[in-house]
Length: 410
Image 1: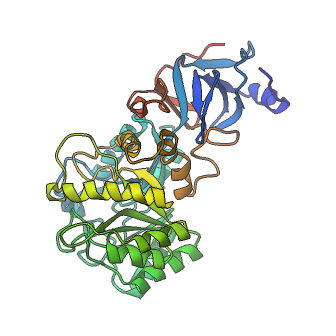
Image 2: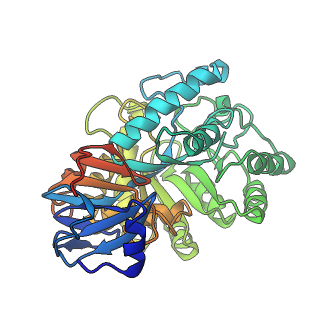
């Protein structure tokens, strides 16, 4: 193996390496027993020659496995218990109990190979707290991109998380609060949803002017905005308001699904990310069984949206219901492969593209020098069979092995 002078220098400071039969670098499969060098929390070298490593280099050899960038789930709710149907009870729940539950769910994400999560709705900015605790403590967890309580109408969708705000002045103040509290992203409920009575998923909760006020303030502070939007009008208004992302993008009407392809064209032209919450367990009870046919139609629409050039980010909405447990993202990637995306595109949707959506593309979603040492290894070759993602054999988060063998030779 050829080692640069920089790599020789870092070896004296504890550099080690992980090797497998092949590697997906975020863009393409690279065969030939690649070797990834890690120093601290960063990748410092990627050797694709297949040559034997230096005798003094400590190596974790994973054999006939594929290395991938750690998966990124751009839409989760760590505070949500997927089996709890009465999410409204969170309004009065003890914060310590919620935070403890969030730690458990974060651990479940890691074990499934999800090394970065974007939490798009908590209570009391607890995801911000957990993010900071992981950064300060010895305990390792997934990297958390936190939104805090989503901005919503009074008694609107997920009102029980505490983000109620009505009118332009109030939503602007809500954005300022999130910036002051350390949120990484602003989430706004442009339409109603399924789990909160009162506002139907097809109904708009905010006007175009209110949504635009949110994006102006957030962007002035360097914060992206993503909008929960199931309904046609809510989606159109969100795109016109210059949001960075749209979650769900369902095109729900009062009694069905009716896509607006002019809005999709606007999405493509603007480069708006679509958070396609398509990760589900293949069996189980839906949180809203009457929506099953609409969700199937939405999947068909996503396939066409992909063909039209929309940037579909595979994500889960983990915690929303029994079929969306924490760590369910690999099932969504597998499902993406059935929508007309190639296996490479499906994998990129939860790695390189997801990193872009979360504004982490400078250090997440790829296996490359200078990137975070967030790696997973799966059995076999996921470029041939996406189902390999269900067999996560090793997880490395920020250069630390959190799942799988830790037997390093050398």
